[in-house]
Amino acid sequence: MSPAERSDSADGASTPTGTGAGTGTGAEPLTTAQIAEHAGVSVATVSKVVNGRSDVAAGTRALVEEIIRRHGYRRQKRAARPAAVLELVFRQVRDAYAIEIINGVQLVAREHRLAVVLSELQGRHTPSYGWVEDVLYRRPTGVIEVFSGLTDTQSGQLRSRGIPFVLVDPGGEPAHASPSVGASNWNGGLSATRHLLQLGHRRIAVITGPERALASRARVDGYRTAMDTAGVPVDPDLVRVGDFRAEEGHARARELLRLPDPPTAVFVCNDAQALGVYRAAAEAGLRIPEDLSVVGFDDLPAARWTVPPLTTVRQPLTEMAATAATMVVTMAQGQPLAQNRVELATELVIRDSTAPPRTAP
Image (cartoon, rainbow, N blue to C red; front, top):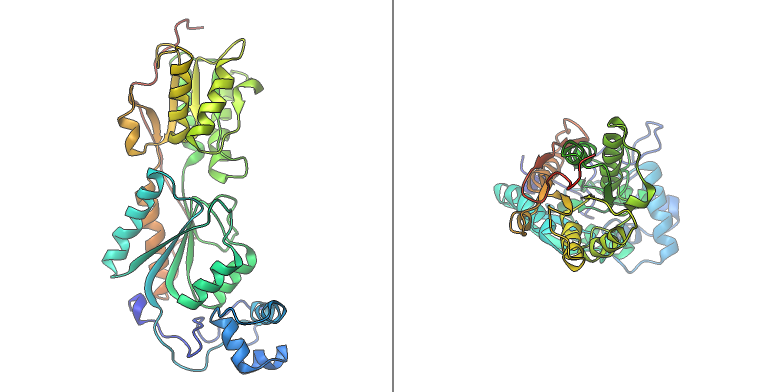
């Protein structure tokens, strides 16, 4: 059965009869009429909430949503099909990272004759309340969240309406019940740092991503593990917190290069910040890799065109996105997932931005 062939209720919800966000008591989920009776409102009001309509008072909406969350929702009628659309949601759309994700989702969408709708959270870590209302109203086949997440309430709203969702490279720790796709970030940080250690570097700096970002924390943990295993203490002055933007990489690299004992190498937790490091090195009159070795993370297309080409950890972004889209389609077809968390392998790609330090220890 294709996603477009799923059946729903007349009021637009899509949780199968007998399922829902229940309390665990085993009781049958409630019908629209029963929810209305519990809430002391009209059936029409409940229908508006279920379908994401905005013309309901906030207090009434919260009450109805809480009843749905506790007891689940049961449809009584056959309804229109869900829209043949995948909602692709980015925290920000700003570089080739987003293009790689879009390409992966489209590979799967075309195969299943689905359109892709793109939206941006303008830097927020979770969607706004209005976004959830819009999704409930549009009723897409599924939702893919990239480097962001959903609140418990938002997750419950999508589940109770039978709208499947998957998180890609989630910004924080995904809830146990939230399907997600990521990369082996810890191993990537480990391999990047080991490469620099094997070249003879000991003053190895790291420019991280946001501290709350799960991927960033894992990459830094890999860096620390490699340093510890090699018996090289991590100098706190060489650990700088970034935000995955080139401007931040530039600023943090300038700080590092002004230290009395600057690093001979930098592991940068994404390629965009690595470009900022390149600029800071040029401004300081340093050559890469003769004076400073640089390793990035992502292997975006620009990495091979920098001068010199960037050594980086390849994160399989297109494959991650395609995997997430396949998981959404699988759930939309009513089939169980083989696993809730999928982690794809990273790979160190050695180019010309790394070399032994001028004076090996």
